[in-house]
Length: 96
Image (cartoon, rainbow, N blue to C red; front, side, top):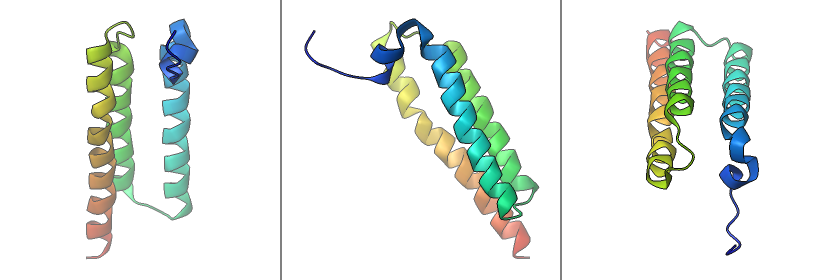
């Protein structure tokens, strides 16, 4: 009504499946990039734990609760830290 556009409004009832698809594609592409540079197991562990975080977001999401949506959106920084920790851990191990 006021011209606010968002993917949540765009996807509506399909928000959870759309998030699952988008999160899945992003995770797959991150992992493909890691495979292409011969990343080790800690990098993939970071991706796996990060993927679990994303799955948790989808499971608990209540699209009709804007406060919760904002909290989940902000929790994406935790996802970034998880992936970063896996990549840094891998870099440390491989440098020894």
